[in-house]
Length: 419
Image (tube, rainbow, N blue to C red; front, side, top):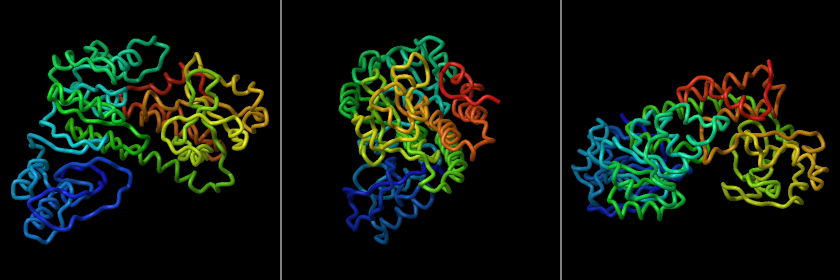
């Protein structure tokens, strides 16, 4: 059985079988694979039986029942599901994270991660670094060309990848170089599907749009499936969920009135962006804090608010995105801001740096951040927690390198508990 652990949305399937289409309520996940006929979290023998039921007229047609994606449901779909179960499929059709339907030749051996940095580090975490044949200029600059004082776990985990060909920017790929690398599949940034379509149209290689979104794990699953590392993906997801459960077992029992109100400064371009914040940052909630901007901001990205709004929120704690000097916005910048002197966090000097996003979202650093914030928010409840030890364990689990978290602390100005 090949587990993909996802939920799906259902739409009408143009099929030779005409019947009512079953519907499943969405839960926010977007990984969809043709062959998952019964719309659960696995492609297995139950899908074969479900397709037989469709053919015999006893089961409803589902969006993903057409396993070989040829517009009809018949015995050939059962044969395709059998191949998927055994891992012998020659092609796989899925709906990517930009809602594009893509058919991929299998197995995949040569990959170009062309989108930002998320896809690149995910391939490393999945143990598929040996499949990478080119890197984009964002990765080259931020993972390999920055000085040693810039913390980049990808550089430690896969130093050999820094010398791979540069395939251009994630919005402006170098088509000629990509063609020369003969990739089986290309990954691109989900918010720019037009770029993905352009690449695919020009060179005829499947382009899959992906995007990491905090602890949803869709990206790990879809890339694990494509690269044949789905077992590793599920291992990492289970590990992360177990750690989150360890924290929330404590923080879920904290009354709302005892949780600190937290404002996170997400600006990276100087003090004018003190009022830039995230509406969503999962580690705050997991660690037992209240993100004051959560209800005010509907976007998952950063938005500008007013200082009057910050005063109205009156956060108990202010977090500043970015731990490594030099800081675009420093703790002193916040503490000395004349407009924020009445804010509790400023009055009590409760302003700290946080790792935050890392050119996209890294579930490894995000998970370690949950422990850091839990100890920061509720020191009495997590008095025995060695966040440096657990941080090193988490990053080693994802990247395979010891001491990465300690190295990050050594290079940063983030708060550190000393034993």
